[in-house]
Amino acid sequence: MDKREGKIKDLAEEIRKNEITPEEAQRELRKRGLGHKETWKDFAPFVVWGVLCFLPAIAKGPGKGIEILSFFAQLPAIEFPPIVIYLSIAFFVAMIPLAVWHFYFNFKKGGCGSEDHTVILLKNGPYGIVRHPAGISWTVFFATVPIILSEIVPFTILSAIAIVEIITISYYGCVVEEKTLDIPKWGDEYRQYMKEVPRWNLIKGLWNLKKRER
Image 1 (cartoon, rainbow, N blue to C red):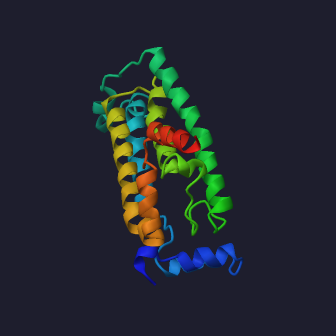
Image 2: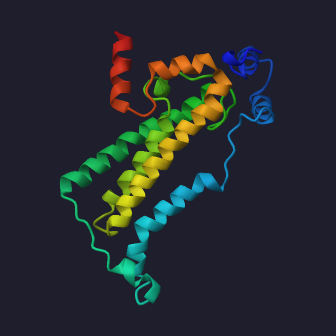
Image 3: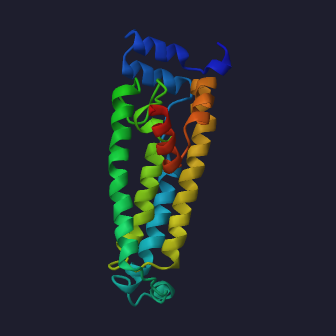
């Protein structure tokens, strides 16, 4: 098979012709080393995020009096004007439909009946706006939560570091996914898709979508 065509063109065709089941497609993806595998590395950034965001609150509350936590209890809290909190809530809520839409598309149209595994390259719906709708959605969730909760859970310099950390790791993860999974799976078709749809830029993605619909 020409590698430029991608390594799963045959699976996509077999799914479209109902020659294999979604479960069989998933198994074949794993055999070819192109299936999604969750490891501790997938969850570690979120654990770090949680520790950075909530450690000062724990130090001032349940951990009060514990010497090792005294430094974190003394970190000054950063206060936000109401408009910043309201905007954060708006961004959080706006990402919910995009996340749900992504899961629906993967499950119903990806060919594997799975939220994670796909053999059919999805280029419409949420994927017509950005290449990684789940990535941008979850990143916005985790970036806005510390601000939304800042009146209850102190927002400190550690919270800011946590937001930068989660944005950086999530974006890097999407870049790696494209190089190690998406391009090998779909080849030149995915490379062309990369030229047409931005990775994360929602504003550009919506603008491009509007132009395509004219």
